[in-house]
Image (cartoon, rainbow, N blue to C red):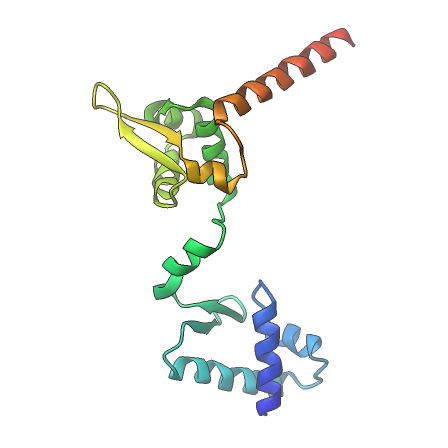
Length: 175
């Protein structure tokens, strides 16, 4: 049983997605799902009984992950993952910066407020009060440029993208 637990641990350590008991059994070429499940449950108990940084989550399948109380360390060391909607909001900010938050809301909808909060927390944008104090000005930070491996400022990138759009439109008009 200990060897099977070690093999299951290796599978969970290596994969980046939650796996079912059957998936794990297939990877390990084990015929009996119940034996795999029993070893897996023992492994879960092993992790929960010690005061380590890792746990096996079983909410949507089984996955080895860092406990929530240690996520601040992970976020410092690993790239930030953004949901597609948040990434689209970030794209609008980067291309139109500085942009007022109220203008962003008109372009991206009311969810933009939540997206802005997440992007500020992740350090990808900054948020400062505008002159009249009724809205915020949003712009990208050096961490944004570092994350996307951009050199120079994003206004130059926006100009390049605008030039590409103009060239594409001219080409379409010619055809």
